Length: 129
Image (cartoon, rainbow, N blue to C red; front, side, top):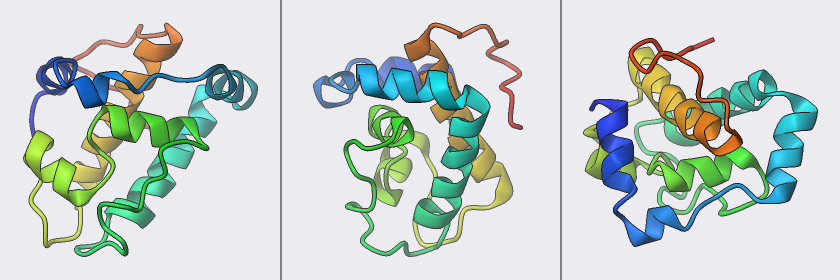
């Protein structure tokens, strides 16, 4: 696993990753549900869609829209095991352990907070629920 700020900086140079931003509907959803609820959804998605050693439909399991977390996953390259390996150094072929799941959640949280303008957490101490 890599330093979150370093990865987000590298991702910001990717034309593909840069195109992902929260829509007004996504922002409204976060405002209505609250960031804590959205982050709890992220935890569920991580466990179900990324956690297994060989996720079903790996590389295609994360929709491009429909939930703010899906957008965040594509923006942060936490959308599939291939992207986790390439961008974050998390190897394929083994289930994600709790530290890896915490890391993925922290990456998504950092990006969401930046998008909605509440990046008020200490970057060395991401809030992990």
